[in-house]
Structure formats: C-alpha cells, structure tokens
Image (cartoon, rainbow, N blue to C red; front, side, top):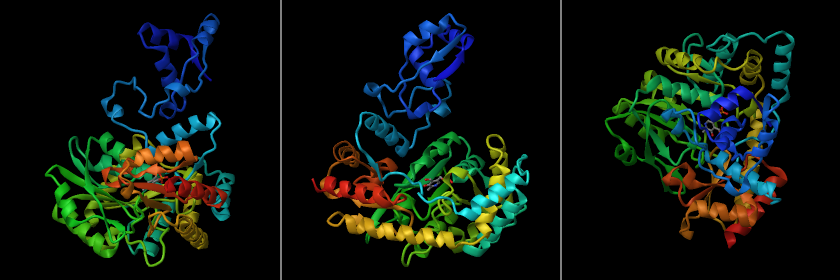
Length: 456
Ligand SMILES: Cc1ncc(COP(=O)(O)O)c(C=O)c1O
C-alpha cells in the first residue's frame, strides 16, 4: 500500500499518465516487481481526499525487462537490473504460486557479522557518534583502511588525501567511473564479469567494451591478444575484479603483469575491485594489481569493502585508495549523491579492519569446506573449481543448450535457482554460476536438486 495525495494523482492523470504506470512509478520496490493496479480501490476512495494505491503482484504479466521509466532521462533508461535481481523477481512469483525453491544464486554470506564489530557500532551509538561524518570518511576509518592496505596488500596510501570512505564497493566503483570518464569514453570489462559494472559505466557516459576471457587449463583467463582485440582509441579505463566474480579465477602475478603492462602501454585508468580478496583457496593468494605494477599508481583506484570479508553486506561500508587528484575527483562525485557511510558504521568498520582477524580466517575455512562439498556433491558434473570467491562455475558447454534455458529448466522443473553464465557476458555462455555463500541444508539440498536437474 502506498498513500498519495489526491492532488498528485489527479495532476498525473490529467497529463494522461496511465494508472498502471502510476502504480509502477510509486511502487516502493520500483524495478523489482511487476505491479498491477486495483482501479476499483481508487474509484472508491477518490471522494475522500486521499487516494490509496493497492498493489498486487500481477503474475500473468510478470516481466524481467526493466519497467517503463517516466522520468524522460535517457541516462536512466540505459540502466538495467542485475541478473540476480531479475531472477529474484521470477523466484518470488513462483514461490507465491506455492513452488518450493532453493537459491544457490546470491552473493551474500550467511554468517552473522562478528560480535566485536557489532559491539563497536553499539558503543559508537552510545557515545553519540550520530552526527554527520567527515564526507571523505572519518579520519579513524581512513587511517584504519590505510593500515590494512599496508598490512595485507603491502601498499602505502596517505589516509589524509589518498583514501575515501564509500557506501560499499558499489559507490566506490561508481565514483571512480564518474571521476574518470567523459561522454563517449570506452571502458574495458572482462567478459564474463559481475554484471553490475555495466549500468554505472553507462551512467558516467561511458560505453562497455568486453574483453573476451577464455578457459585455459581449467581457469578463465584474459590474454594479451584479447586485450588488444578489445582496445580502441576511445578506451580510457579498465575495470578488473580479482578474485573474479563469477568465474572464480584469482589473477596470478603473470596474469596481472599482462593486464597492467597493457594498461600502461595504452595509458588507461584501472579500477581494481578487490572485494573478494580474503576468500581464496589452496595455493591461490590475492595480489593487488598495484603490487605488481607500481608504475600504475597514478592511474589506478583500488576499490574494496567490508561486505564479503566481514559478512557486513547490510552495513554498506567500503573504501577506495588512489592518487590524491583522483580521490579528490571521486569525493566530489560522491558528495552529490552519498555523503559516506554513517559515522557509527565507520567506527565499526575501523574496528573490523584493525581488530582481530581470526573471524576472517574462520569464514574462509568454512567457504573452503563448502567449495569441497560443491565439487563432491556435483560429481559427474563439470565444475570449474574456484580459486577464490564463493561461486563455482558449472561447465554445461557440451549440452549446446543456452545457459539461460538450462537455468529456467532447473528453476521450474527442479526447484533450484542459479545464474546463467550468459548473464555476465557472452563469454559466460555455456556455464552456470552456483553460489556457496550460503551453506548448511540450503546448500546440500540445492546441490542435490542441481545434480538431478543436470543429469537429465
Ligand atoms: C565483484 C563485486 N563488486 C562489488 C560488489 C558490491 O559490493 P558492496 O556490497 O560493497 O557494494 C559485489 C557484490 O556482490 C561484487 O560481487
């Protein structure tokens, strides 16, 4: 239910806006749901001064395409919901029809945030840490981030001018793109890759140029040839993600040398999203591109957040590090939208980064057990064992069936939700992304359903 002033409604109707669109426009979940409109409810209440929109899910017309946008902004109409959000819509509809579904889809750790971090935020609240934060980030948080970068990544940044607090990695990537791009600039994106990079690139006026990854010796890699093939004179920046969502590659020194040398040669900016750095397996260990290529320092922004490492997805807190002029430009971009995470959240984040790190090791071990479970339970299925992150790619190329069709069949006939690889770019076709961010029975039963569905 959503109340609107009668005047708002009448004005919009007089302008010829269809009531159905109005219901969509004012629906609090906007793009996530297809909303119907009970005209009768409106008619009945019109006389009373206030109008009540009653929304109901319109299952028959449910769509995954973005809803019409009334704003008239071309920039906004180029935005797309992520694949996970679109599939969630589909799941909710099936669940409302009584279907049992297990999700092996989301990138959300199922651990509670470690107690000492929660306590730090409670303490901060009790101490009255509720006023506006420093818009670049609280000094204590920026210092904690600089300390962490030196401890874990062997990188030195000045917390005064080279570190910026952000509302999660999402806004870090957004601010970096806003700071780097002009209209028409092109951005290289590994293909496949996390699909939420595309919309902010467009929002910043950029265009995506995919760099087609290939599977070599059981892992997705980016070759120099692929980089050169993708390059054009309009390319200004590249976004890199290591450990790499969705494919699970942790870029090695030689991988990074290829990529960073190319960026240097072509004079590109690099945005390095390192949000999964703490989740690596076996021999694989995270390396920041800047460790390999210090010469890129003046053109590289490192983006990180506490979402995955400390199971703090809902806290919305992250940080960026880069050269002072770029950080200053990013700060100006962010000041127009978010003014940084809440003060008491930053206090807790500082505690997370500088306090005991055994919680991180414990979560990594548990992900390691789940990873082994995925490989074991999916015996007979080709799984590309991840080197990092909490997604495994199932290789279904042999079936010759589009990955989205397999995904739909798995969901509708076998009750398990995964993401089709093609959602992350053409290079992901022939694969399915299976998340083990959630464990326990969810994972066990979900994998059973998946194996059964793939055996057909
Ligand atoms: C590669 C990658 N970057 C960024 C994000 C968003 O991170 P945050 O929660 O810090 O905004 C995600 C979330 O799934 C991700 O997978």
